Length: 321
Ligand SMILES: Nc1ncnc2c1ncn2[C@@H]1O[C@H](COP(=O)(O)OP(=O)(O)O)[C@@H](O)[C@H]1O
Ligand SMILES: [Mg+2]
Image (cartoon, rainbow, N blue to C red; front, side, top):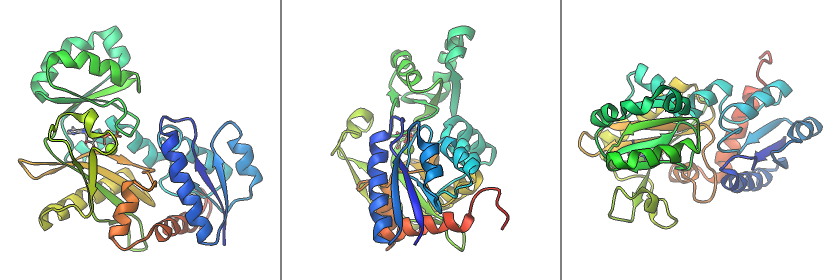
């Protein structure tokens, strides 16, 4: 039995999802016989972590603070072991622009893109380059904030006239925005779980739009408009390639414990393109990592138990072995 804190909630835009993930993790840890305290992360988090004499903390936070390395840095300073990735891997995967530059440098497939800060538009006239970018990426193209999750602020622009409003929407979520080539194909998520023999890729989850209008992204993400299939029905060679690309992304970014790599499988080329990696993916009843684990015969309690064991085995950062 270990004494564990579950860090959840917080002030990010994904607070509600995190409260649900955290609640489920707490229940699982209690069933596993651990002594568990739930902490809704706020101004008193340091005080509460210090007072708790913890063996480890489970990071069930999504978005800002939880996924960008902030809470991980604080836990390092306090000498508390924690689940999932360390500070640097969080930084690399939180910022999609950085992730995509690293992927491109490592020759891993990611859709072509251009990224600008808000000040580049306001003070350097970056808007003048839009026609050239639009020509290069062609329509539809995807406009998304560099940071954040749950598809917040992402828009598909079908024509040049759609781009300015899409940029304004994306800049309301982050001060850096990317314009990305739209990949026509299937939406796949590869969950990765570390183990004694290194990371393994779990069965792939496909998000299938129930709606026929493929480009109507807003509608796709309405509740009930998307269904999930796991394992995704793919030719073995495509599954193997997608697993390989996701595992290489996991290693490249230095992710640890567990993570989820989001891919678009291009219909024409059958090539999986990496969109992003999530350092603290959702663990709610409808989330993809638990679905993937279940398909691999790993129930929720076993999944959560394994993630905690990895954190306890790693110990606090900076500790001698
Ligand atoms: N370049 C793209 N081409 C096609 N669809 C995309 C593209 N980028 C994002 N999407 C769609 O938007 C969803 C969310 O994008 P993603 O980059 O994973 O951001 P988030 O952090 O919000 O999950 C994807 O799962 C996919 O359905
Ligand atoms: Mg995603």
